[in-house]
Structures are given as C-alpha cells and as structure tokens.
Length: 216
Image (tube, rainbow, N blue to C red; front, side, top):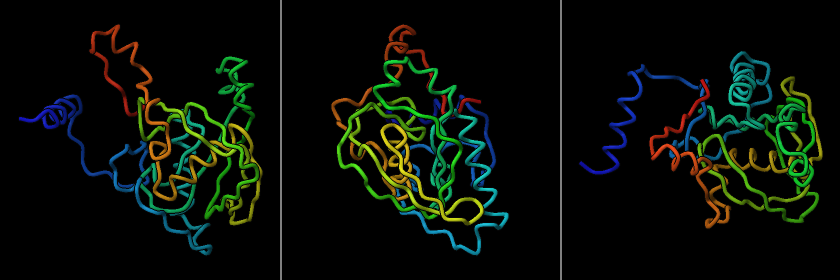
C-alpha cells in the first residue's frame, strides 16, 4: 500500500461516513477540488434576487462567520459563479499585534458582497506579506499584491457598487478575485517561504497533531 493510500485510509477512519453533499457547502473546499481551478461563470442580472443566488450569498456570510475569515468566494463553497464577499471586523484587527496591524495597513471592512466583480489596479506598487487561505488549510507563504485596487460589481440587490481598497483590504480583494479566475495564492507565492503554520506544535506533539478543515 502506498503512502497516499495509507493517509487517505487514516483520514477515513477519523470521520464517519456521510452521504453526498450538495453546494453551496457549509464548509470550505480544499486545494485539489476541481472547482478551485475553474474560471467562474458570471451571474445573470435577472437571477440576482432569486432564492438560489440569495442563498449563496447567505451561505458565504455564514461560512465567513463560521471560519472567522476575511473573505470568501463562491468557488470555495463549491459554486462556480462570480461572487465573493469580504469582511474585516474591529475585533479581528484588535487580535493582531498593534505594530503588525499598522504595517499591514489594516482597516475595518463591513460585510460586502460583489457579484460579477471587476478589479482595476490603482497603485501598482507591489507589497509582500505572509498570506494564507481557508482552501489551503494549515499553510502560509509570502505573496506579492498590489497596494491599492478598485473593485466594481453588483451588490446583493443588483445595484452597482464601486470601492477603492488599499493595503490589507486590497490584498483581501485581490485574493478573492483570484479565486474567481481559478487561481490560488500558491500560484504566485515565494515558494521558499511556504510554511506549515503549526510546525512548532507538530514538534511539541511529536507529530500527533491533526489539522482541522473546519472550526466546528
């Protein structure tokens, strides 16, 4: 039996059998899921207020809250549509050391949804910071992103919204836009900086550490 099969069998023993799930999911799909590599389809304007699309938006908000995320795209919950949401709360910012939050230029972003978004670079200066992704659970890497961008799209009511984001908020927007185009931060990261975010705990536990793929 190969190592890969052993690992799969080990994970299978950890979890009870479940029936087939249908997106939009309550969980975040992981790297390897084909949905993450597809270019998402635009949403028809006349469908924005339908139950289907509104449920996807509600599910994005639910999953963002469940995971404590800063952003989430429809592909990450198994839906191949051009929708993403972002949110950065005062509480989340306060959990980051003050000097680090200042260096990253963190600022509050209310829960915001973009449907069929377009992104325009406002400041082409590249800023490098460590970045993670709920779809690449347990890892971080240095990723270059533009300093400021403008995002234009439709909100949950089908009304056009345009907003300029800078620094960390611009990073969130670019990260989520990439998901809509089948891209993951690992495509543009500095490969030598890829780090297991809990490598110290792995050593302290003598390797007996399980990385959860859902907070609940």
